[in-house]
Amino acid sequence: MSWILNHEPAVRLGAFLGVFAVMALWELVGPRRRLTTAKGPRWFANLGITIVDTVVVRLLFPAAAVGMAVVAAERGWGVLNQVSAPASLTIVASVLFLDLVIYLQHVMFHAVPMLWRLHMVHHADVDFDVTTGLRFHPVEIVLSMLIKLGVVLFLGPPVVAVLIFEVLLNATAMFNHGNVRIALSLDRVLRCFVVTPDMHRVHHSVVPQETNSNFGFNLPWWDRLLGTYRAQPAAGQEAMTIGLEQYQEQRRQPLAWMLVLPFAGRTGRYPADGGGNAPS
Image (cartoon, rainbow, N blue to C red; front, side, top):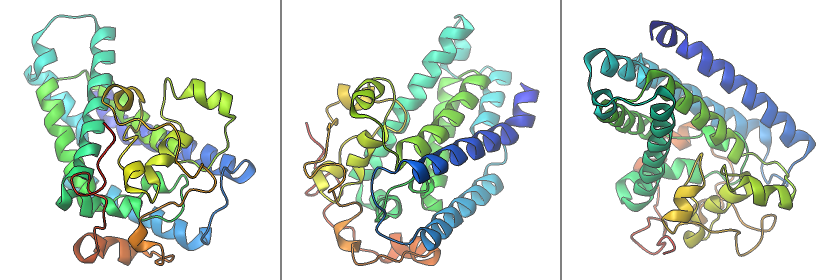
């Protein structure tokens, strides 16, 4: 466990850089949609807020979720530390449970107006590519980490399961936000096992009913099981409008604007309890 804790930052950074490079190259050679804004300033802002998020999390939670899993294992805390089960089963169960929590957390950030204000930073992006998957307000990241720490403390998952989940979540977030073209026949198969870019792009539609669908980041099953799945946007993948209707004129979105947005911005019709209900 000490090896995992000591090398967790390097493992996550290596996976991040590798997936990011693959997705950025894929977007270059096989884009799904034409971008509507200049990539340079937009990437500078999106990656800038990613750096801010990383620094804040590492300052507040040096060991993060993996460290909490180590503490839980050493002290016997959590449900899974009270039962005897094969390691492979507890790892799979832990990854599935953590993914379900992330799905429910995502729904909550759409349903609660105060939390939606934070989450607007992610949705206000008027384009959709690999950097959108990294664009979150630091306060949302801190709240998300607190939820994750609480779940790890309650569940007591194996340390390796938490590391696997963290790497998968980060990698799939970049994948399913990719502006990449995948054959429709292949996409139909892939979205049975993982959230694909075409599936998640619906979630970034300007139409509230579409924004409040397809909440999954990693596994697509929760949307299907819980009634929030929407196969395609009404306007089609290439004609759909990305972003939030109240910020369509805000084409330039610098880092300072994103940091201030939750406290000075307009929420629009998007909170799921106020005009943009998720499909039943």
